[in-house]
Length: 113
Image (cartoon, rainbow, N blue to C red; front, side, top):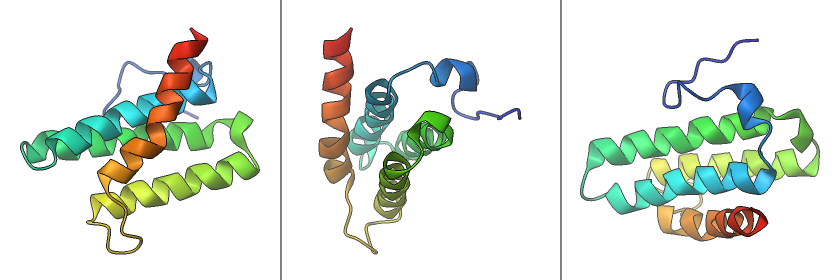
């Protein structure tokens, strides 16, 4: 099945699935960090970064290695990203909250290199 990547056209699903979970979520976290920084200053950049984070998170959710409990947490994380994107009305999620959640994955991925 071919997946069309809007925000990451050079990224293949096979290449993404070679990354560890920490690397995948660290990359999601990078986009979350960008969204957090640009939210009030550059709305177009904020929106693009949030969409990129969702796109990468969708790729992670589709990775067959993360079935079971991990998949449930990934789906919940996606739900929280959506909540923050729409203003936090459901759970009160903010991009600051998401940045704190995803940062340890980026640090772990960097330590593993």
